Length: 269
Image (tube, rainbow, N blue to C red; front, side, top):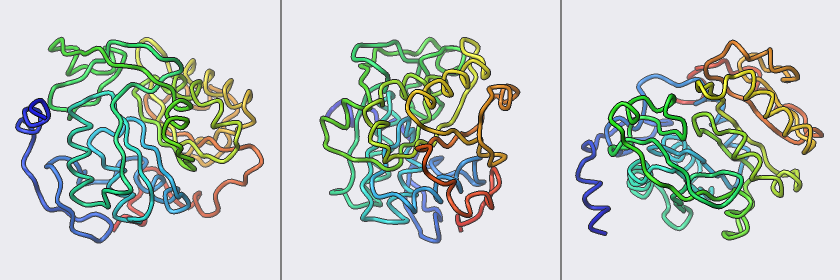
């Protein structure tokens, strides 16, 4: 408890902001003034979900969308940064139904163990297992030993049955997916994956690994910017960051999702 109070004392003050037409009180800097690439896509997919797992939740922006949009939706927020997770928990408990919320500290991967995770003490800048993709933390030498756990083990331990999993892990996307084989076998969940291209894992190679996973698990990947099936890594090799929707191959592409452009403010006001 003393450690948590110490962490919280370093964080920004509260501010009242508008989110989905509601006033929410959050730590300053949690809600962007302009929509990010995937805000509207995430909200659209959330509205078809009952249980949402947010991997790499950072300060809890998408969790806030979830609880403001539908307080009855269950939410599990996970981050490898203690500081970021503390801010997310603070934001979410202030604005959501505490009985529908759960928080988990750790790095979601494909096997139990430990990694060195680059992250700032304030929990604002993105953290990563790759130093090239967490420049603020790497510049100041800030890293921590973090336990690793798989999504399958999390689901087994919690009894959750997510139908939407958001993955934003700054280059470790395929590690998360490899640890979700049992969930994929159920053919009941979509994955919204933010793809990254750290120096250690260029986008072409990252996309190739994701496509290998989809083929092994009867999933189909879609490149959300163009709303087309991703069948060749070359389609996104030029991107430094982009978003994929992975869903069981027998499912149709979500109706009307193709009306939402990257960075759109649709549905957000």
